[in-house]
Image 1 (tube, rainbow, N blue to C red):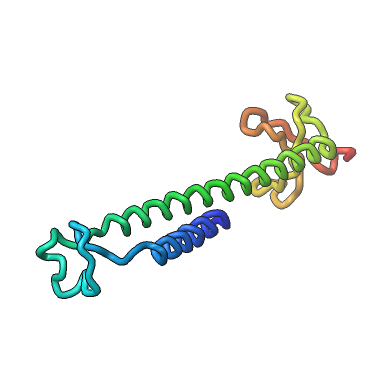
Image 2: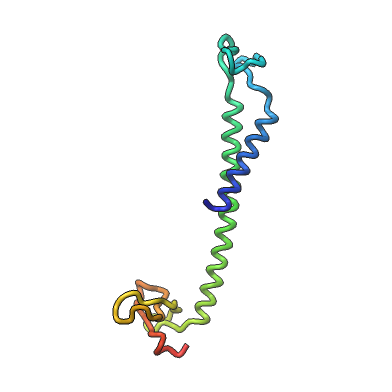
Length: 140
């Protein structure tokens, strides 16, 4: 679970219990209040227990928690995108150009074939471009 999601859940629960603390006690549908509401059928002659404040509070706190989670997750995503852009710029500066398309190249490890276990430069646009340079042959 992402950090922003955890913050949103905690914030939603805190808001729910804070609002619940300040809400008046449960009442019957017609507004009649009693200490025994919700027990012993106290509201049976008054239209039943009015649970709408609890439902609205729960929905409101879930909504706020979702907004907070979205905010923090988006902020985290933006930070990761900035880091990715910085890494790409560094790769472009420090890697050779692809002999086929001129794009920057990534250092990769061969997994199969006679070069298995050896490093090579592979084009960053793979699979559109399959340009490679063997590391032993490159001058970088």
